Length: 157
Image (cartoon, rainbow, N blue to C red):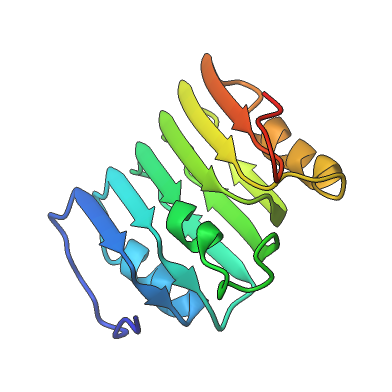
């Protein structure tokens, strides 16, 4: 997915992308900036290539779903148990966040209005403990948390 520089979707409130290859982080940011009233964003089984950072910045975003479940199960996905990206979310109006994936390399999160979070982390191992702390610190003000962490064989939580 490469987004033109002049994208403008001024009335778009919900955007779901499925099985899209994000090859340029700036292009993805242009798409989000081109949707000034976007309230719901879902990325379902999208691959992230050509950038080390998934960057989501939106003042209007209220609902965000990052679901990389199918890609995690694909043996062709880089490293199988390694999601080698940093996730940056700057969405101060976000009230719902769902994350189904491996632990990322790092997290920078601004979600100060967060009310409900569903997190399901797959293939958790000892190396993920420190990195997952940044995720949990970023959601520390959440009111409702559903958390599931699975190692290679069985659920931990």
